[in-house]
Length: 192
Image 1 (cartoon, rainbow, N blue to C red):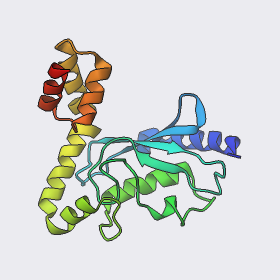
Image 2: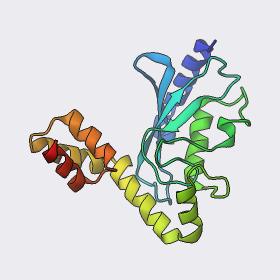
Image 3: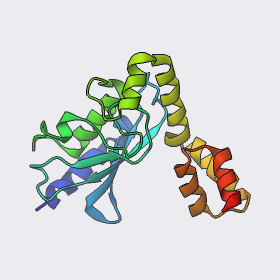
Image 4: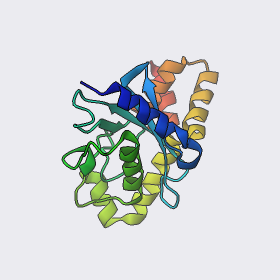
């Protein structure tokens, strides 16, 4: 059974220094088992200026089992699936300890954005690009950060398409399906 008192305490601790760390955690739909974490992109990386949402599910064995985490925000990184947001990080698997917290796991994800480990990839295509063509990797990661992790980028696209008369839910789902490509989304919206 999840220790809900510990989860509440962790949420309070995590949200105490949001202004300093930029890391937030909140219940998803009033559930202490399903949470949404938010981390800022680290300075000096292609993720700088982005805000990344992490979907968190606490297993019954938490804190003795690691939280299940995945990036809800699309991100171009060797250790994060560009398709599903699945994460390859030891502390979310066999190196978890009950002494760790949701916040330390989120800080580790932020550190992972700063220091990719392409030799132990979650996404082989991204890892290959990281190893063989750093410049293309960096520009692709920056593009994805602009398209998916910055409110201005995606929100401006959504706003423009809504102003054309399309329903917001449809606009958001199609934009996500086409990887943030506004022109392709418009084509799909017009043909729907």
